[in-house]
Amino acid sequence: MLTKFFEVHDDRFEKLALPSVHVETLFSDGRWLEGPVYVPAGRYLLFSDIPNDRVLRWDETDGSVSTFLAPSRNANGHTLDREGRVVACEHFSRSVTRTEHDGSLTVIADRFQGKRLNSPNDVVVAADGAVWFTDPTYGIATDYEGERAESEIDSRNVYRVAPSGDMRAVLTDFVQPNGLAFSTDGAVLYVVDSGSKPGRIVAFDVVDGADLARPRLVAECPCGVYDGLRIDRQGNLWAAAGDGVHCLAPDGRLLGKILLPEVAANVCFGGSRRNRLFICATRSLHAVYLNTTGA
Ligand code: MG
Image (cartoon, rainbow, N blue to C red; front, side, top):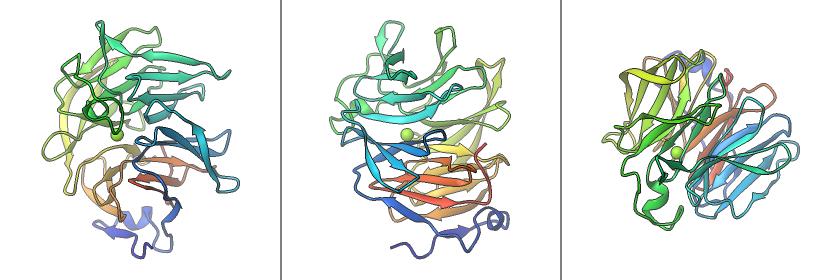
């Protein structure tokens, strides 16, 4: 039972997380929940239960949770592309895939320069349709969240796949690139390194839609590591961390926390007004209405 939900570090947070609002627990029977994506047309949320090799669906119309996909090839991060198609990172198949409107599966990426990817973790689609994803080794480190294997690439990169299919490594010097998100105007890409000590968020300028420049440290994680993150319409970052979700101003200042009893892995905005934050936290899926909306 959650009793105290918010920890205020800056007055601005009181306008984002209203004191009368509470955190609801929607589901609590997972092993390691990740990769939430809200599908507006269907009024449901998809989220991954990676060790259980399944993608679950929380139905907004009746609150039920059912199996959407099993086996899920140990799917992790999800997003929607510009056409509303679900894009998934898959540990077991070591690929990024897209489910077409007719239900068929398209592989967006599974190799780089002829070598298999490690285990794609999280993904975003840019305004130009390019798919950006991170490729740490968590899904090949053990048999728990994928299939244990050696890295063929021997590097943990961030990739950009252009609409043409052309694929490039745009970031090659992170220990374990993890969550990623664009700023509201698409000019900045935030990337989490959950393998650095401490874990951190780094911002990059996006140059010509295809390159990253001018890296600067946004924040170091004071509790556990950052994992997935999303941006609200004011440009604030909502990042999963060891003690819940941290809300950071664009300059990295900690505004406040949504406190949770388990480690948080990822978040996404959803609901018809996009003002509800869904949180995957270890075994549980939580949701909280915020006084802001997803970017
Ligand atoms: Mg992740």
